[in-house]
Image (cartoon, rainbow, N blue to C red; front, side):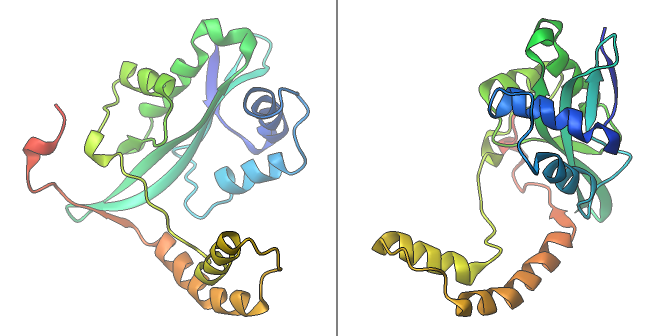
Length: 205
């Protein structure tokens, strides 16, 4: 049986190597910057919560053979503050997939300290694992949206793409994006507000 424990900063290089092997090039040598990326988005982002950590799975020799990423969001529900665990990257070493390492990691994460666990853009396999450990598929909530963080630069790039232009971005776009980006960062730090649906019959049973 694999042991599961919280992901630590000292695991970064080993997890990056596993992620590179499974999800990227097939090599166990991670791309430059991959470990730093994982550190930034999983450990150093503003809402990182040590009580709802990413998880690693260890084999009998102490080698990391599985990883489950965690991102945490705060929200208000009926005036009460809640924490939402956003299930992220899920990888397991090819040598141990017959041991259901991925399923065990998801089960451990779902039973963490968060008030609610969600995931999005899940593959069919991830959907099967999630439902096997007690998660539900919310069809009406499967709607994708995008928050543009640099609107001026995005608009300029979109126009260049449609016109087939290869000209570099205008400095003016950067100047216009800066104040808009600051507003976006403030928006990202605000707690979400959750509401009860007016018609509960729309919820899956």
